Image: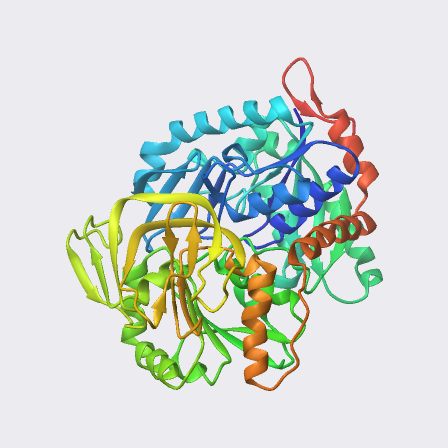
Length: 510
C-alpha cells in the first residue's frame, strides 16, 4: 500500500499537525486517504459512527481526509487511569487495564495482530495511508517490543519522514542523535526531515538545512513556520497551555478546571472560533477569579479528580461561585462530580467495589459506576424547561457511570434523546450537567448559551458562528500552508517510487 509515516524526535513535535495537513492535502489531490496510528496514548478520544472509541487525533485526521473515522485507523488506544495503569481500548472497545510491564509482556503479540489486521482493512478502501508514530523512535529501553514507530513502518512498508520541533531548542542534536540511534536498516527507511514550529526569518535557517543534509545524507523537505491559532484539535494534554494561551483579555471569560486526568478537553475548543471569548485553565483557588462561566470537563478518573478538587479546597470555591449566581456546566466526568453522591458499585472507577464519596452538591443527583463503558453517538432535543427549548443537539458519550437526577420544578432534564433523557438543567440553564461530549459543537446551542453571558454583562449578542464550516476551511488552509513550505513534488515521487528490491533491502528511487 502507498503511504508515508511521520515519526518525531520527541513527543509534541507536531506529528499530528503535519499528518492532518497531509490528509487534507492528499484529499485535495484526489486520493482516498486514511490516517493511521497503531497505538495512541490519550484521554482525548473520538467516537466513530458505529459507537467505537479511537484517539481524537485520528478522528480529526479522518475529517481532514474527508472519510468516516473507523477503529482500523487507531486499533489500540491507551487511556491512562493513573501514573502506572492504563485502560487498553482495542478496536474501539475496552479490553483490559494494565500496568506498563504487564502491557509489554502480555499484549505485544495481540497488538501486532491488530496492527496487521488494520493495515489490511485500510488497504481495501483507501489509496494512501498517512501514518503517525508516537514519541521518539529511539526509546532504547522500549524498542524491543514497540508497536508504534519503526515496527509499524516495517509492517506497512512505507518510507519515514522525521519531524523535529525547533521551538524546543537542540534541533540539530535531536535529528542527528535520532538518526544515529536507529539501526542501519531503520536509517535507510528515513527519507526526509521536516523542521516544524520555526519562528522568525526563514532565510536564517538556510545554512542549517544545508548542514543537516550534508551531515545526515537525508533531504530536508522544508521548514514549517509556527502557525498560531490554527484551530486543529489538539492531540493530548501536552498542548493544552499553548493551545489556549491568549495574551489579550476578551469580553467573555470562561474558566475551565484543569483536572489531573482531564479527558476530551477539546469539548471547549469551539470557543476558539468566538472572537469575544477567552478560555483559561485553572488548577488552584487563587486562579479562579470571577469568570463569566465555569466548565468542569471530562476525566478518566472521576473520583480521584474529585479528591484532588477537595484537597485544594476548590470545591468550596466552586460552591461559593454557584451561590453567587455563577454559570456552571459539567460534561461527562464533570457532570458526575456535580452529584450529591458518587457510588462506585462495580469498582470500575476506583478499583474498590462499593466505594462511596460525597460530590460537589451542585445538582440533586446520584452517580453510580457500572462495569461496562458506554460509547455511543447521541442526539436529541433540548427539554422545554431547560432554558434552551426545542434546540436540536448531537454529540457522543463515553462513560462508565450512570447519573440519576431528582427532577422537580427547579431542575429539569436537559435533553430528550432517542432513548430517554440526558443531563440536568437548573435555574433555566444556569447550571447544567450532561454526558454529551461536543455539546458546544452545536452552533445554535453554543450561541444561545454565550448570548446569555453577553446579555448578563450588557454586551451585544452575536450571530451564529458556523464551527463545522470553519473547521473544514481550516483543513484546506492547513493543506495549502504546508504545501507552500514543503517539497511536495519530492514527497509524491518518494511515495510513488517506494519499493523493495529482491534481497529485501528497503529503498526508494530517491
